[in-house]
Amino acid sequence: MERHFDVELNKLRENLSDMAALVEGMIDNAIKALVERKEETLGNVFNDEVEVNKKHIEVDEICLKLLALHQPTAVDLRLITSAMKINSELERIGDQAVNISQNTTSLVKQPFFIQLPIIPQMTEITKSMVKDSIKAFITKDSDIAKNILLRDEKVDDLKREVFKKIINYIIENPAQTEYFIDLLLISRNIEKIADHTTNIAEDVIFMILGQDIRHHHLFDEHKT
Amino acid sequence: MERHFDVELNKLRENLSDMAALVEGMIDNAIKALVERKEETLGNVFNDEVEVNKKHIEVDEICLKLLALHQPTAVDLRLITSAMKINSELERIGDQAVNISQNTTSLVKQPFFIQLPIIPQMTEITKSMVKDSIKAFITKDSDIAKNILLRDEKVDDLKREVFKKIINYIIENPAQTEYFIDLLLISRNIEKIADHTTNIAEDVIFMILGQDIRHHHLFDEHKT
Image 1: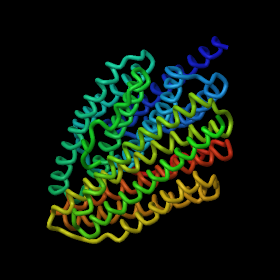
Image 2: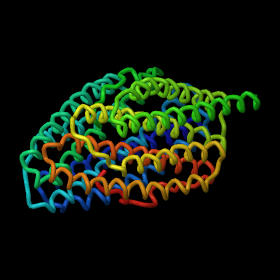
Image 3: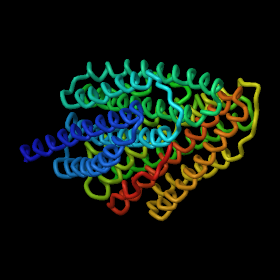
Image 4: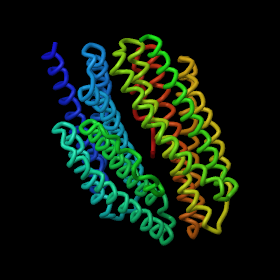
């Protein structure tokens, strides 16, 4: 029985790692389409979303089976309930990559073009957060998880910088309002992904330490 | 033992109902401040957020205790894991009410003023979705839950309408760009709340029917 439990746990870890790799690739392809101003890579994002959704349901099924058949307690129980939460976060990161793709589809249709280097900069940090959040879960490393919380603040700062820049751009080029709003919404999608990795990091810390660190920094967001 | 389980289950239901009532009030106060153009009611939103966050942690603790001590299976197991998910959604609805409040704080500072009746209209539908999502959970009524999914489409339509209107307003009044973007972001916050109630509705349907209806409508969002 114990062996079967471990086999299922490994399946759970593998599935979550696969989901994390998929959503990271989706973010990559979505931002590539934006930066290179072409829609070719967006097809991959939509295809990968289907895979992520399948895994989302599969992971929940594995977790329910583990809870029903093995009735775990303490650390194992926290591991499985955390996995259920991480599963939801990863699926929503996938949703945000789809949202970036949809906003990019609208944006590349417009003849206007400007590069805003903060966007790929935000993306790089956010992708590293996705990678590290699943690494923290798999290796049970609370230091990696805690470091994610710091990077979230950096992404929030960049989001606010984008906001200010976009306001000024629009005031100077009102005819390009839709273009700039698409860009603003994309920066919000990226920041939301960073938020989801922060949730994962908090779940991982709870899983490892049994200590709920959520809600220790209230009202630290602005204009989301 | 069975009695203790029921007592704890009732505590769980009560806590989630309280959270739902709290976040509904937060949405009300946030939009009231926006429509009446005054910040007085926003203090309540920030205070209630503290309460919601406390309950968020409390509900998770009750769920973990129920899983560890009573090792439920089948329907009871689905009820508790669904409650954990609904708990997260309600907490995030509270976060969005806080975001509306922060965007409103920025908006009311600006001398410009225009009423956009779609915003309170979206809010009314969304508030009814919050109310019904917890009602569906408590009464185990899948019809109420399914009806929420229909209203989500209506809110999405209104969100797109706001987007188009805002683009035109900005083109005509570029000096008021920040005001209009604050308004646009508020419409997105409301639409996000509707999304969270949709997630609750899907969790409730799964809890009742044991049937996972998530991901049956792919790519039905645009510009989120």
